[in-house]
Image (cartoon, rainbow, N blue to C red; front, side):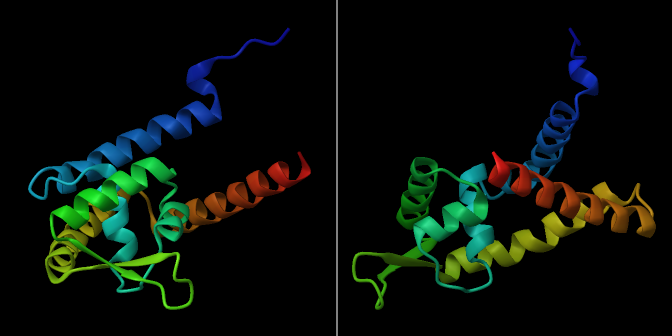
Length: 149
């Protein structure tokens, strides 16, 4: 029987890296802006001004229904989000950032992009391009495996 060395197992390594990168970025939005990870994801998905349903936000941000709903409710209470009825589907609501929410988004984005660049600064341009290709290949492979399963 084969044994598993967890620290050399790719999914474990990826999870550990993801956690470290997320924690590093979270220092920005949890500090001055007092946003949770879920609220940050909602804010980031609505920042381009597009009207989205809670379901669309959940799909975009990989948030389950309850955490997404809690974040949306809290952000509405804080005056960061507006909810309106979807004219195409009266049963659904569409969300957008308020001026206050957009202001926070506009303050945060340069900060998180700067942090992203700082994190990636250890990579050459070629390595960044390779990393993007690797992510794309692995994403396509995981989708194919899931479909074949």
